[in-house]
Amino acid sequence: MLPDAPHGSADAALADAILRALDTSQTGVTVVTVDERGRAVRRYANQAFADLLGLDLKDARAAAPMDFVALEERSRIETLYASWMNGAPMTTVQTVFIRRDGQRIPVELALAHTTLSGAAAGVVFVRDVSDRDAIETALRNSEARFRLLAEGAPDGITVHVRGRLAYANQFVLRMAGARSFQDLAARGILALLPEDQRHEMVERLARVAAGEPMEPREYNLAGSDEPKIVEVHSIAFEHDGQPAVLSFSRDVSERRRMLEDLRRADRLAALGTLAAAVAHEVNNPLTYVLLHLGELQSMIPRLLPGPEAAEAAEMIEEAREGAERVRVIVRDLLSFARADPGARELVPVEHTIESAIRLAGNALRHRATVTRDYAPTRPVAAARARLEQVFLNLLVNAAQAIPEDRGRPGEIHISVRPGANDRVEVLIADDGPGIALPDLPHVFEPFFTTKPEGIGTGLGLAICRTTVESLGGEIAVRCPPGGGTVVRVSLPASDAPVVSAPPPEPAPRRSTPRRGRLLVVDDEVRLGKLLATLVGDAHSVDVATSGQEALQRLQRGVEFDVVFCDLMMPGMTGMELFEAVCRERPEMESRFVFLTGGAFTERATHFLRRANVTTILKPFDLDQIEAAIQARLSG
Image (cartoon, rainbow, N blue to C red; front, side, top):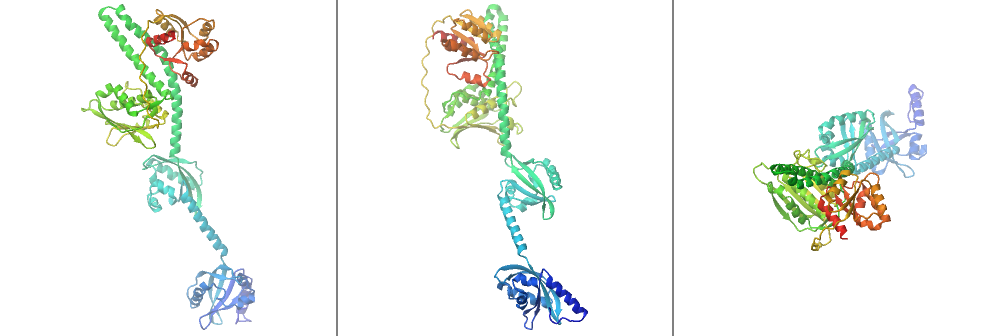
């Protein structure tokens, strides 16, 4: 009981009621006064206060106010008591009590003014805040762990509160090129996006904050040196009691590039198959067109007199030029479709470049001067003719890019130098007007061209890319700010030494052509009849228009010196005919010569790689046919 309480009065009844309430309170309560020397004196303590200190009630009431305050806190708390007693404003303070068992417990003290026996007194409420401190510590640790994880995350993390950027991790700062969060916050996250995507982002954040689920969305980053695409996934959550949006941003630029490369590879594979099939179908009629034109040209002096002969010859020559142009286009189609780079040898790059310069002489002569800068490099492993075609295409493109009417000759500069990672780098630069920026990403696409109609097929750079990549190399085009175009070809260098090819053997003397018996197997009826007509004077020729018809003749034991066989035919293909005949008559294997407009199936490609298969590509001329006949007649 508090001393000096006024018993027997209304005040005494109230005091008794208050004491009963304090005695049963779950909050520790003690009453403190200050003696004449300014020291705190305990006048009351309840059971909750005693329990807090691990004491019985008697000991708790007998103890001095400072007995259980931690030593380092006593001076501060005693000073606070004295100032409170002297009328200082009440405050809540946190300190540390020491229990009887030595355990330190954080407590919160709140003091209320009162009077006791006419003197100032303070009612001190004491609350154990150990759990609260533990929770606050856990929250601080949790926040520290979150920040550690967030700052080290490989993806961007941002928090928007009411549309305002409240947090961004280091990934976002690096992506934005910001020096600090304050720098990024001042600019705003929208500054990272192109203008046409900013409104959509604002609307999206508002819808997510309102609780609407949204699928991830891709955005382009504006102002970066390389095109960057980020995928953003946003969710709603509560931040400091306010609705907010947590967003995760992932750089998907490389993934998009890989998907584009995969799609391009799929398109090119399909286009390659189509190109080979088209080439096959075009080469068949083109063969007999060219053969007929050649035969007609030789017959004109005999059929037409005087000036009419010259006029007819000129018409036929123009027709031949047109057919030859079709032949070149078909050849380019086949080169594009053929992924196999061909038989490889060690090739000094500068040798193939010089050969390509000679072949491109007419295209270069009237347009540009060629300058060279060749540094010593190791050779590359490549099919010489295919690599030569790459540089020929690039040189012709460079020449055609220089306008003929600009009043001065252009310049094409070629440099060869060692590159990084054991590569050989070739740069071909022209001083033409360059390529328009919108066109630059498309220059390697098949059939894409900026040349006037009738000049080029749009396959040149596509063929270059196919060939270079099949050799493990890279090809790229850039246009410097001052104009012109630079093509860079990078090829893996070889460690093996260059072995000089042996000198060619002298050609054997031509003997008198021998007469042979031939079998022509082709489903193109006109082609079979034409061959029979053109070589019929020098040889005996049979024609079969299908593989089954040819097999029946060969199974009857009919002897043929040469079998000219189409590779791809309906029903029984040339490959199936060859295999069926060779099983029964192995001696016929070396007598087959395949005529093909192009192998557009995987099986046909593998078949033609066999060492014992001889092939003549359509369209062909009679000299090729006669050479194949005589080679087999001579054993």
